[in-house]
Image (tube, rainbow, N blue to C red; front, side):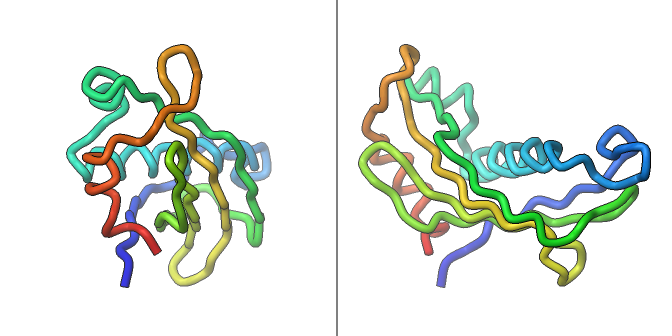
Length: 135
């Protein structure tokens, strides 16, 4: 059984529109924060990837299904896991929950690139750290 990366957070006023509903584009920020925290959990970071491995991770595509709204002061949880990988990319499933209600499902295609933006092979040390989170 695979592990999920888990990230908990609360909705603040700045995340909402005039009606107190989370503005749809802010979910992209929340998902990015969860992926960044997942790297930290593995003993990595975007700076470490850049300095030690010459890698940057970019989002190639993102497909989001907005199932339910979330509101000011909601406490949310993001669960993330890797569905598959190739030599240069990983595919991640990220879901946002309020309690047991799934409010967002996102499928993210992440590509490892060098500083010039060219796809590069994912380093084996990185793959080994990610293995428990593959579905």
